[in-house]
Image 1 (cartoon, rainbow, N blue to C red):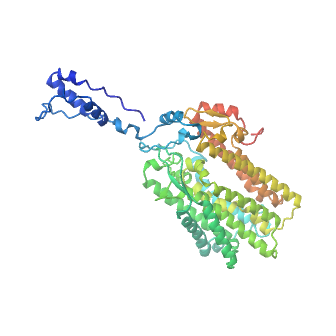
Image 2 (cartoon, one colour; image 1 turned 60 degrees about the vertical axis):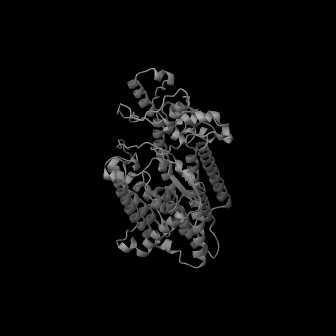
Image 3 (spheres, helix red, strand yellow; image 1 turned 45 degrees about the horizontal axis):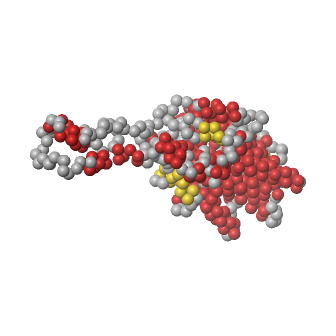
Length: 528
């Protein structure tokens, strides 16, 4: 915020007595327009013996005291809103461990902002969005129909024309009930409340992080259902109907989100989803952070119903296999369930880390994220466990051991790089990160060029891809469908890395060019 222009200081009392009455009136008029603090100091500087007696009649001039012009701020209000420059000055006086990152300073009274119209469009614009809206649901249904009981291949299956194959009241109630159950856990006043990244207005939204608590309660509820002999196999027998219920739910929620965004303020819109085209904005997301009171819909859907639901589906498959094999757990299926359970638990334990991702910071909450969170993740990421539960696959112990080591390497890289990034974003002056090399940017922050982030630009993506391969290896190579996840995930992360790089190049300019020279490889060292 630009500081207001300084006013001239008032003249001394002795000089004022020698001037004419009209000049004295103008001087008194100017003195009344100054800040309260300076007026007090000015009055104290006048000794009682020399001060002129107070006049009882009003001054001849009826001119009002000058008021600050538009855009100017009174002296007593100047320091209310800290700026990045003031943060840097404060950091110079603080010890190294107490310094705060410049880019994360919150403004207490931000100026009003307006989101402009979106010029660039992704995914082929409105035409691409149309095919994505139709193709994504068809893809989830098609892959699960292709890989069904005792058969999993690319041959054309028999498509049922009976509507009850796809729609079921009980399946719909299970899906909606699960969503509401997770929403109830999210609203409980349990867990820490953290601040998100600064918005364009300068405000920070607050988020309740109790995802790991929700995971523990969900596991306890699942254990209770198994103990009470509730027919959990209904999730498997009505799998297609559950997918259809999720698709319908996603369309309805996305439409309501679009209507809410249209009726909301302009400042709440997503910068990438404000084209004015209904189909594109509906797909990409018209509002950045849609909320109902303190209930943040995007943050909730990112890690709760879909991610925990993915693990619950895996546990249903594992429990069925355990009961079918007379109390014996299949090694391959058990290993994949454990791998994916660790992945889900990690995401929920470090739930606040998602607040720095592109999904939360940049992307609006529309059909793309709604469908991805609520349908794509739970019903496609479980393809490996579904295949292993429905087909007998035997592996030697040393093969399982090698797969376990590969998954550990991927997880070690994924968790190590993410933790390093998150700690650096929270406090780049952390003494534990003092050994890391950085490149300064023009906006005040720094870019990591050593440690995990000197290996490649997205070492966390590399760890993710390695883990996805470890999840498919126990399925063997009898069908390419079980390899859909690592193939798709690699394409997704490459695309996301390029999107993120465009944002960073625009944000950091010349500093980003220096960073790319220092870290030339994007995801795969020595390859890409």
